[in-house]
Length: 157
Image 1 (cartoon, rainbow, N blue to C red):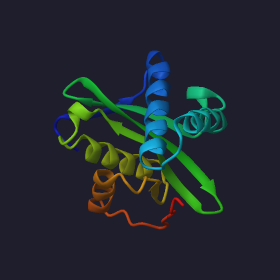
Image 2 (image 1 turned 60 degrees about the horizontal axis):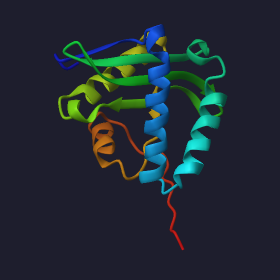
Image 3 (image 1 turned 135 degrees about the vertical axis):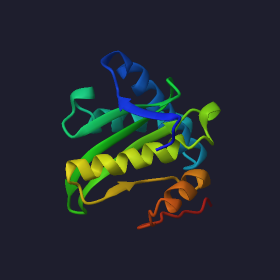
Image 4 (image 1 turned 90 degrees about the vertical axis):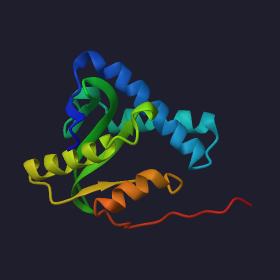
């Protein structure tokens, strides 16, 4: 892990800020990379969060962390222990590093932390989704040994 980075559990007083950040990031990804109209993306994000996190920070199997850069909050990491028809994985629901902290190895450190958490929990793999237009993230994941398992494509007519 980067000498600059610390990944620590989310504190209860950070929950509302986390939800606001994670929602805004998800909406922006859907709008910019997914081509979804902002209002539609906002409604989808609200519904998705309500379904995925019915008990908020106490939702079973979900883990929330803050990524710090030399003691300053620089982003977050959201993981979930998932078992289903596609197998058992530690799913990365969200990873975001603030723009002014990017390029310092914090994203890599957060992903290495996720992998260590997976091993600690006895989960056989880490999985995630990434929008096709997010080339920086895709390069990071590839450099860490992740491989594409599906690609969704579309064409606007």
